[in-house]
Image (cartoon, rainbow, N blue to C red; front, side, top):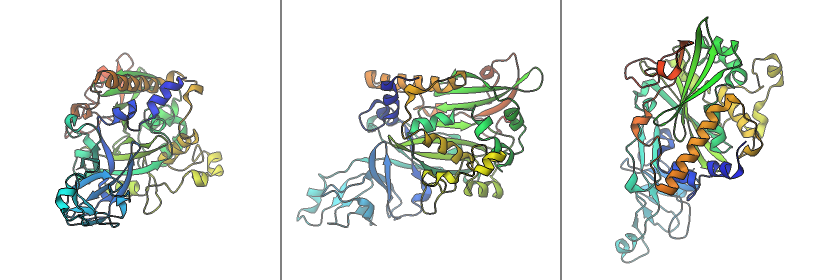
Amino acid sequence: MLRREINELLTQTGPGTPMGELFRQYWFPACLAEELPEDGAPPVRLKLLGERMVAFRDSYGRYGLIDEFCAHRGASLWFGRNEDGGLRCPYHGWKYDTTGQCTEVPSEADNSSFAENVKLTAYPLVKIGDILWTYMGDPAKQPPLPEYEFALVPPEQTYTSKRWQQSNWLQAFEGGIDSSHVTFLHSGGLKSDPLFKGAKGNQYNLNDTKPFFEVADSDGGLFVGARRNAEEGQYYWRITPWVMPNFTMVPPRGDHPIHGHFWVPIDDENCWAYSFDYHPVRALTPEERQAMIDGHGVHSKNIPGTYRPVANMDNDYLMNREKQKSGEWYSGVEGIAIQDSSLQESMGPIVDRTKERLVPADSGIIKARQKLRKAALALRDHGTTPPGVDPKHHHVRSAAVVLPQAEAFLDAAREDVTVRPGMPVSSV
C-alpha cells in the first residue's frame, strides 16, 4: 500500500504542487496538429495541469498557447476571432498574439501604449510529428526539443491519436508499464486485433500466465522486463521503457508497428491518453493505418468531432456479457484501449492506494512511484533537474526478445532497447 500523503503528492499536478512542477520541466503533448489544421484555424480549448488555455494558429502560421480568458473582463478567447496575426476577443475587441501579448485595445485613445502593458500567460507550442508540444516551466530553463523516434520518422511511417480518460494520470500511466495484465485482459485481442495478431510472442504471453519481473534503471527512467518461459533453456522477455514522467512504449509483436503512449494530466481527475504507432524502417500499410483510424490496437473509436471514446463510462463501455462469457473479449469490453480505460476509470477518479495489496508482478509500478517521488522532492528542495529532460534520454525503444536463461536481460538487450536509425526493432 501507499501512504496517503505520497498518493496525493504523485497525483496532484496543479500549479505549485511538487508533481505539477515536475511536469513543468518537460516538453509534453498539448494537442494534435490536426486540431489546428491550417493558418487562421478556429482556436482550441485546452486544460493542462489544471490550467485553462486556448491553442491557436494565427493567420501567419505561428502557434500559440495562451490563457483562455481575456485580461479585460474574463471572456473566453475560445470565442475569439483569429485574424491578422492574432486572436481578438469578440466582446470588446482586445487582441492578443501567440506570445500572449496584447496588441490592440480599440477603446483606448493611446491604444499601443496601453496594450503593451497587458500580457496573458503563454507557453511555447511547437509542431514535431503529429503533435503540438508545449513546455510550461520557467522560460530560462527551457530544455531542448524532444527527440522521440516516433515523432521524427517520416509522416508515412507514423500515426498518433488521443482520447480523453476520466481518471488521474497516474493510474493510466501505471497500466502502461504493467505487462502482467496482457495475458488476461487483452488475451482476445492477441488473437484477433489486426495490429497484434500473428506474432509468435503472443503464444509466449498466452502460455505463461505468471511472468517474472525485473526492473532496471535507465538514464531517463526505467526498463521494465517481463520474463516468460520460452523454448528449453530460454526466456521470452518483453522490455518496456519508461521515460519520465509519462512516456511508455509497448513491446513489439512481429513486424507490426510499435505502440506507445503519453499520459498527460488535464487536471487531477482527468488525463489525455496519447497513443502512437510507428515503424522505424517502412511506411505503414494502408490496412495498418486504417485499422488505427478505426480504433484498433492502442487507439480508440471516438465520438465524431471529439476525442471522447464511443464506449465510455456513461454507456458502461458497451459491455457485452456474451462475448465475455465466450472469451472473445476477456472482460466483455471491445478494444485494447477501452479495455484498459474501463478498468482504470472503474477505480474512481483517483484510486485510493492506501488499500491496495501489491505483489512481485507490480515491481515496475513500485519502482516508478519511488522514482517520481524522489525526483519531485529533489526538484522542490534542491532544484535538481529530473531524469528524462535531456533529449538523449528519449532515444529508447521497447523490445521483445528470446534470450538464454543465464543472461541478464538488459545486458543482453542493450542495443535492442536503443534507437538505431534505419534498423528494425527487435521483435518476436
